[in-house]
Image (cartoon, rainbow, N blue to C red; front, side, top):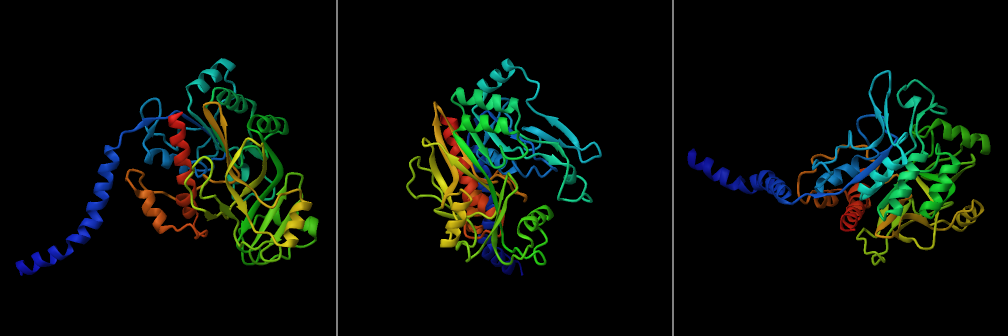
Length: 387
């Protein structure tokens, strides 16, 4: 019996190696990799709960790559940002931001930074905490880019630091004057249009389509008679248009395309589906396009885009040099992650997840994270640490 047990255990040793040995080796390698300091300031005003979904993905990458703050600690998604901190109680939460800081304080803060990251400034609203409230109108509690945020970005840019901004950094509820100053500073111009993909536009099938969106469409087009996959475009002025798959565009899901050989050498998949919110931006000539959106519009779709003042292709991720630093803009809710990532303390883990979450699977948001956002932000952090 003992001999049979020995033979049985011997035959199982490859499984033990796979289940225990490889993770242990991965963890030990991660421990042995030296950490490095990178001073980052993150602004996220859209924090509704303790998932910190608008910046959790960024912080996972920071820990995995072993970037630490000036105190020598790993960045914590629950505390190392400026914005809204929900309490989970009736008082809703508190604000920790740059408002009230003097110009000298902002200058000192900007001088110590390597990178400023605007994750989201859309804000938090009453119906984020009161689920009985209607979703077609809700009073703002906190949100929008303000003058102190803008001043810090300006000082960081003037100091040759890296600035990364993504949707929604300047759309509603940011005041128009501050938005215009941000656009001038960053060399960008928002067309006023945002868009969102839905895999089913039939409201009897898809109950996740916001009520306010349906009502707004009905006011302008009499009725919501939409079915199948489609894109909804909404303009700041209130206009709303629906693009139906095959009638108006042929790529079922908007695709983010990256040229294999791009000027700055960013290594990313050539094609990644993106089924979430995006904005349509115009960029200054000194920007380089890392990736762009392609919906493959039909002839009718091209005419409709033209009538809306939109181009055939529009930027997804762009970059331009800014002295010793760089300015980036992501025209999408790239860092938004609604799932748990697991421990970041394992070397090579992103390679494993990329093998599991293939780039073509748009139904799982982790696919986009592992195949596009994580490698992109990893390269940006690496370039920032070298500047």
